[in-house]
Length: 254
Image (cartoon, rainbow, N blue to C red; front, side, top):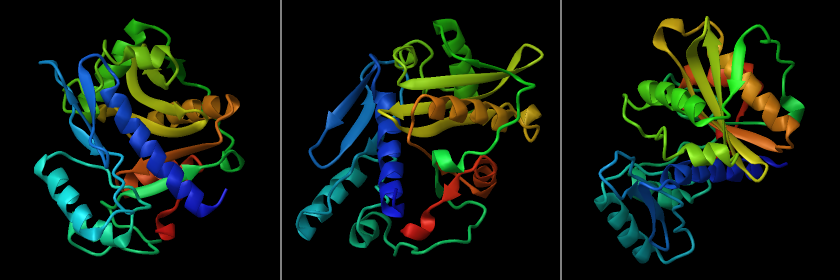
């Protein structure tokens, strides 16, 4: 698998992950031809997000108008890593950093793990469950939302459960003395997967719980035939965790 193919898988993983938030009965996905966005369609809380932006093969003036439309929606967005430098400048007003190999604390780092790079995981002393029921999913969602969404139900404990039941999301919880303390999930897009929703309760961080629950998710994914797992580290500290699991950074490809 080439580096450029891996970058495309990171893009695909990000777009697939965002689309899953919209794949619930209280949410909707709006297709605007050159991009899509999700938003809640009811009074129930849900995130709004723009994704699947593809403007590289249209005239520049048309692309400028669509970028303006996207910005007017005032939503966060994911711009594909494989997008052109010109499109990057239109969105961010600056030049893209190429060939990055050194990272600052708050850099976003794009990483991937191939089966051949998987390490010999040894965290077998912790109680880790794969979510199998609606009640277990509610526990997983409560931890995820409490840590990553400020307590808001971005991942709804009821409406998003069908994604877990169908196996599109494979969710994991690690326990300490019967208390759920950390979570992770694999988003499985037909064998091309991404690691998402990695979170640990604040009082038990840096004790190996996040690593253990990620190891279990990764091990199961590869045993089930996944070809690659991507992840987007939101900062250098997260990247170091993923690096300890065997992930490699691919920012230098950009």
